[in-house]
Image (cartoon, rainbow, N blue to C red):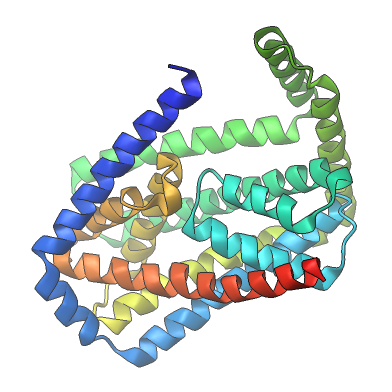
Length: 332
């Protein structure tokens, strides 16, 4: 069995296990979950939906600016639409960002700029990982000082957090250190050439040059480049505020530091799992986290379902409408 097939095989098993456990929890707590959702405050749900849409818009602005800096020549309105569509799709069907990357290439329909699209897209993903690390550090740090966390839980979260920071540091080093990145790309291309008899050296070097020129452009923009990171941070902050109003909708008032820590731990777990939208892994880790701090499993599950609807499905439906409109324009 090939390595890719083995990876897909284990991902399917992992997805099945997580989803089976997820479904079992819903089934065993169905009445409590149904009562909680039916009794939710619709005013808070409306605010949660508006926060979710604002989150997507902040991310879309950052996406469109990054693409222009990386030399992508396209109509600004179309680029903004593609950004919103791919971010909403990628939130729902996250597979290491590959959903968004592939969809951007298909919608932009410009073979000459594929390397520019991919490089800008990967850099956008990198900034999202960096923003997640920053907010995780702030929220978990605040939780340490504002709440009484059991020692065993504290040690587990410390280990997870430092592993995550190490990964972010390595990705940052490869992304920002040109000499190291160039050597790594050359070595990777040579390995591919020996194993698969395909030469990607020119393509990899081209991508390296696009990334280098984009990073140099960001350096020249100075404060503007920090503004882009700021908008990505706002994207994550508003997604966390969406969860906050999901808690409020079910009349649960948790310490904000604990609430946001649970959210960012769940997101990191979901991303690491490589499952579509982190489904199962993200949800179960958040439910377990909040259960430690006195939130019942049925209540935590109800909040999770409400968040899935407001943050994932509502923007996805808006993006789907934009997608079909864009497809019609492309066909014309």
